[in-house]
Image (cartoon, rainbow over all chains, first blue to last red):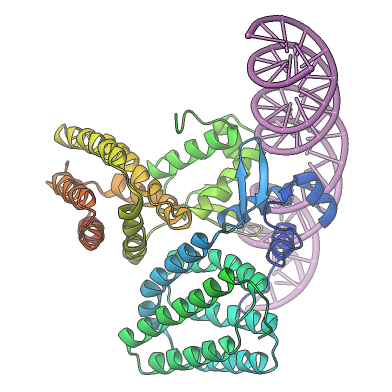
Length: 222
Length: 222
DNA sequence: CCCAACAGGATTTTATCTAATCTCTCCGAT
DNA sequence: ATCGGAGAGATTAGATAAAATCCTGTTGGG
């Protein structure tokens, strides 16, 4: 066991609060008062304050001095900006992955990818996203570039919130799976340029899909 | 007035603690206990804890659950990784600057650049860095891309710490000034490709200088 | 009469303190 | 070398106070 996870209340509160925001139970613009959250989550003020600070760093929460915190509302430009940032960081991170990824890592990524495709096939968008996060986390962990990986990790909740609000277009998950397969093949071949190009293109496709759905926000299942 | 003195103790404590770390008074690896810092800075535990969380987000502090916080030690690969990340984000941010920068902004940037060159001419490396931060802050603020700008803002303290520890090579500040001038000219001409290329190249030059000095760490003044 | 400025109180954030619980590290004994 | 306990420090809760903001009702001038 590499990590037995000594869980603090701070971690638990952060995860719960993040989920409330990402899933929309706390909608954009909602006021986040420490006392109300502490009561709702059954915790003290200390871990709630820490959680708000962390989620502010993730861009999920906006805070002004003496004016409290609110759930951040994302405009269309924010979607574009977040994905442009992520694509740029992918351009840094994927070459590092090629440099350091082991065949054992690739096997583990293959296994996660199979689970992702199973969830996608079953039409389980939320489940697919959860596995997708594991996939990307492992991928980025192999890069040995903690600063760049932190940017991807921090902005993940924003991406998840957008997806849960806007949903996937028909066939989107299948195309994502194809991109993953192609990326894994390029990684196996240690083809830096191809891998980076595929990752950036995949991110851009995801952005385009989200922007299209934001423009015409009807929820069509998978 | 865009930003005056820190309003809350949290801001003040964060700024003081960041300075202690950046200037080396708290060297890499130093243990950061909440009680000791609270006593040293004349504050309570609440703002100190918040400051540690913020500086952890900036990559200046490393924390493990129930094991406390330490000043992060940067290896050579970290320097490279941080600058590669910053260059990639510049590639996103500078086109946004071209899109949104006003002539008034450019005038203000010219004024800051003049102050930067005056400090560089006087051999005041620390002063030059302070003005340099104002220059870049204003530059990035015009981009209207808060997520990307936050990455640059967060990693600034790391860059500052490296510079204060390793110093500038002879002529480095002058070359930096030349790069700024060229960037400003490209911005005035609204030349997106040129501006982005110059900014990335300037960042890479700064990285190369730091890496050279990290390899042979003798302190030569300006 | 209407609107703006102002003063007061309520609310919330921020900050400090105390105390209790939990985890890690270290040290000695088996 | 492994186990267990003591101490140090992190984490948490709760009460409380100070500071700032928000809300509201009133006043004063036009």
